[in-house]
Structures are given as structure tokens and as C-alpha cells.
Amino acid sequence: MWRGSATAASAARALRSRVLPDSSHYPATALAPIASARSSSSSSPAPAAAAGSAVAEATAAAAAVSRQAGSICDALRHYGRCYFELSKARLSALVVATSGAGYVLGSGNMVDIAGLCCTCAGTMMVAASANTLNQVFEIKNDSKMKRTMRRPLPSGRISPAHAAMWATSVGVAGTALLAWKANGLAAGLAASNLILYAFVYTPLKQIHPVNTWVGAVVGAIPPLLGWAAASSELSLNAMILPAALYYWQIPHFMALAYLCRNDYLAGGYRMFSFADPTGKRTAWVSLRNCLYMLPLGFFAYNWGLTSEWFSLEASLLTLGLTIGALSFVLEPTPKTARRMFYGSLLYLPAFMAGLLLHRLPNEQKEHNVTQTSEITGILYGAEQQDEERARQKREDRKPSRIHSRPPVAYASVAPFPFLPVPIYVSPQAHEL
Image (cartoon, rainbow, N blue to C red):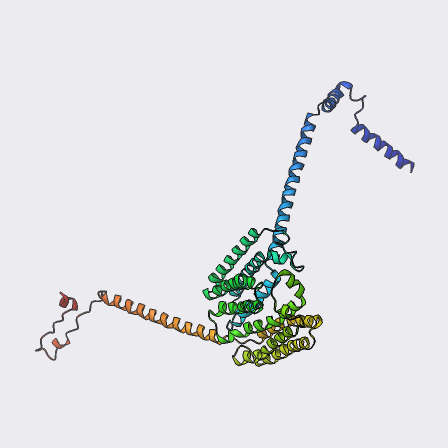
């Protein structure tokens, strides 16, 4: 134990003698330069001050860049949120879903995924443009309603000119995309629907209750758009989903107008429920349009759009919505209206899912594709025949390079020596 401590002490003294120079081994004259260097570094603070100022400038620059990046992120977040609300993204998503369903129904055995994506993107842009223009025209009305006063335009978060520029840009881009990737019929339907919604339905909401039926027409066009984008034409069985959407919107919006009657009245809108304080007429209109949807499943099967199972499923779905409308007729209260409203929210996705699940390939498109292939094959065969004839003519015009040999004059040999030897004339001699 003692030996270990002594050894440790001797090791410590040796280390200290190496680190700290001893005055006995190193005279003062040898240590003078070190002391003078220390005193000079402590007496001249200019390099340290320069380094400190450089660090301060770098810190300030980093803080400025951080503030600028933060302001850019805040601006992007602010305008992104405004564009999201102006476009009514959830409602536009529903429009895109109906358009995509129409595209799938109008396709043949194979669905063009790229075409489907382009059609949905173009529809989304056009729907966002229409919804934005609707809010640009209704700033004053929206500012009077509790449900809409916190939108970007009434709250002042974005200017009307900015919103109008956003609507114009996305509307033109969406229509151009549909014309480029789909066809002119789909682009025309999209442009006409935008005009009908923004410039006919929107002002009509403040003029006459017929706006509900005009809005139903607007909602029924997107499935036709999708069908036209897939098949480049419209047929009778293309009307099943648009008809379902048209009749579905009447009870849906009748229930909504009844529940938000006071809010719509404050906003200056003319709705059908305003002239119906008891709600009886509103309920009867809802029930009548539910009854119109009952045979749609049978029509879809009869016209070759779906299998027979869909006719049963669609009838059951419509019967459930009709029972909700009937309860609204028997007891027109906010409770029954809300029940019918929620039932309509469940009805539409179930109906569309059944259509897509039980759909049959579009026979008209398959026939068109087959006919186009046959015509293409015929034209290709005719072109091949023309090329073969032209090649044969070119071969015939070339001079023959094979010279025929004269035949052996067997007739001049015995046993007939008295016959003359035949003379052979080549074809080149005739030509000369």
C-alpha cells in the first residue's frame, strides 16, 4: 500500500516537472520570450475584437435569413389555406369523384389510368375555379351569414382581385388540360359547367327559388364529363349516374335549406323553403324526387350498364332514402330533416360504389375500338399492297442482267446431217 502511494507521488512529480518548467533547469533568460509573448497578446486586443465583430455579423446574417425563411413559409401557409377554402376542396373532391366514376363507367375492359388522372386533375381545377368565382360574387352575402363569414374574402384574408386571378388561372389550366389529354367534348362540358355555375346559378340564388334545380343540373354534368373523356361520346346509358345525381341533390339541398332557413334569409338568398313555413311542400318535393330514383337501378341493368345485382341494391338504397323523406313529410321538423340530410350523405357514395362494383364494360366503346382496329388493319393492308405493286414495277423496269445461252444444235448432229443448224438470236439483238 505504501509502495503504491510512493510510486504515484514520484510519477506526479515527474509529470509536473515536464509540464511546468523548473527555474533551476531553465534560466530566466530562456523563459523571457514566453513571458513577453503572453504580455503582448494580453496588451493587444485588436484581433480578438475583429473576431468578435465577425461572429456578431454572421449571427445577424443567420438571424435575417431565418426570419426571411420564416416569413416565406408563413406566406405559403397563409395563401395555401386561402386557396384551399376558396376552392371548397371537399366539395370539389366530391365533384372529382363523380367525374372519375363517369370515366370508369365509360371505359371498356381496361381503364386508362393516365387518362383517368388527367381527367380528375382537370375537373378539380375547373371546380376550384367555379367555387372561387362563386365566393367572389357573394362577398357581401357571405359576410352576413354565420356559416360563411369566416371565409377568406369576407374576413379580408385575401383580396377579391387576387381570388379572381386564382380562379381564372386554374379554370383556364383545367380546361386546357382536358382538351389536351381527353378531348374537346370533355373540355366543352367543363367550360359550360363553369359558366353555368358561376354566371347563372350564383346570381339566380338571389333572384328565384328555381336556383336549386339549376344547381342540380350543374351537379349532374361532371359524370357526363368523365364519360365523354373516356369514350369521346355520350349515349343513353351514360345518363344513369347524372340522373341519380340530379334527383339526389333535390332532397339533399331541400333538407339543408330547411335547416339553415334563417341563415339563408339573412344572407339574402331566395330558397324554396322561405315560402313554406310549415315545411310540408319542402318535404313533398323531397319525397317526389326520391321516388324518381327508384327505377334507376333497373334502367342501369336493362341498358347493359351493370349486372342484375345492382338493380336490387340500388332499389334498397333508394327505398331507405325514400323512407327518410316520408318521415319528413309526416313530421316536418328539424329532427326529421336532419335525418334525411344525413341519409342523403350516405346514399350517394353507396350508390356510386355499387355502380362501379357491378359495372359492365362499355360495349359501344369496345365496338368503336374494334371497328377502328379493323379499319386500321384494312388501311395498313392496302398500304402494304400499294408498296408491293410499286416495288414490283421498279423491279420490272430494271434491265435483266442474266444472258441466256444459245441452245445446243442437236438437229445438226447425226442421224439427220441434212438439216441446217438453227440460228439463235438473243433478246438484246431484238432490242437493237
